[in-house]
Image (tube, rainbow, N blue to C red; front, top):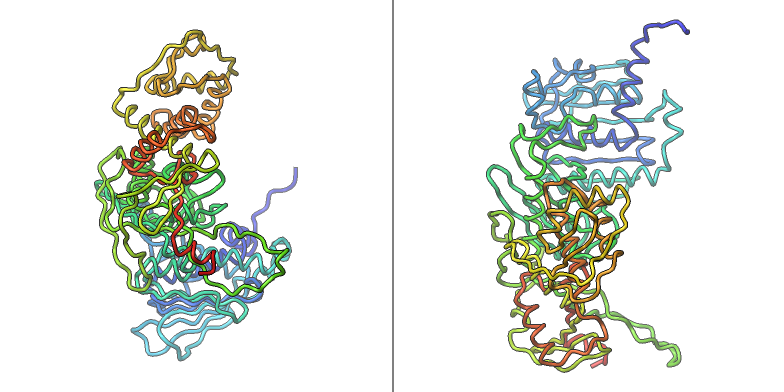
Length: 584
């Protein structure tokens, strides 16, 4: 066995620094969070070569006094906590006292800082954790930290970093979240001398969203503002038409701290799953405020995850609030009028153009939320001067005329100067979904006995999932014997039922399964698939009177705009779009 030795302090510092400083992103995150904790309202971040050559963070915060400066770069030295009780109720973004010491241990660091109470500032220079110089200097109030040659003394770490463009992308992602979580902060991000983005800092979340993602996303969001006891969720959630193919456009904050929580992500995606197609994810920027003793932020050194004292209640609260906010908006996508200069082509090359991207128009009066599972206090959507709000229009289908069925699937409905195309299968799915959900919540789902029971061949894992959710299946009209035979199914399911249908449900429950006693996620999967099974199909010949009855049922719903699987039920094509197509 090798001899056990005591590590020297320099090596200890480098090892400790590796837990805090993983890449240039870590430096930017720690320095900007320190700036916000110091009361900064303006922060500028400048990087070169992805942060490998230099990172400069300048703020107008409170600064560090000369007498405190020697401790600023010491390990486990902080001004943010004193006792263990402070640790459990910490309200600052940083609090461990490791950031500056860790950065200084693996880089060449220069700091210039001044408080409002001192006439002059102080400049210190530290390389690899060693103080090289400290002197007075004239400067403005606040702090500037310049980090050069990151990992210069740990080349093994440096060579495993990615290309500068990739590292710069990580930093941009972090700063975007910082801006969205702090709309009152003026944040400027400069990469290799070019301004990437700059926020206004006027406290307007939509303006921050505009600065980061552009007008297309900023104007197509619904306001979330729900309160329950001492917990509040507020922010913006994108309408289905701007859903993205990945989760990069979702930002969630707890007490203004950006976090990445699987529980929160599942709650938001559960709220939107019947509004979005498979493979699409919602755009959102949401902030949850709650008592600090109701969660633990000490889960991970990066402070990116938290634990909730009441997980099920928080899950349900977030899910309900997001769903209610979306259901209060008109989600019918429309074909916009797009004016552009087109280069003439030979007649043989002319190709019919597909419909352009769709847009959503807000309704003037929100509708009540559909079947709320808990009472939520929703505040009115505020008017933001910097981002134009969609203009309110008349509620669709007040007075309409059915013009017929095309492709044995789509009903054409006209009202005023708009033509609405309704997918009869998607519409019927939504109607059945809502009907089934309402009856299940009222526990009045009617079941029908099968003439011949359906025997299920289940794996041990599937048997366990069935056992865990047997009461839930019973509530929806599925009577299943102890021998794994389906004896009855919901009355709404008029078509034949296969074993594959049921095993698919078990797979869904096993995949999503959050908490056995919390059916919030499970319900929608069962109901959506059951509704799809019973709905009329594309190609079914409905009479006009049947179509009108279906449309009337659809319009009575709180969310008539998508099927349970997220596909649109209605698409609007305006008269202006027709005129544009015909060059009028």
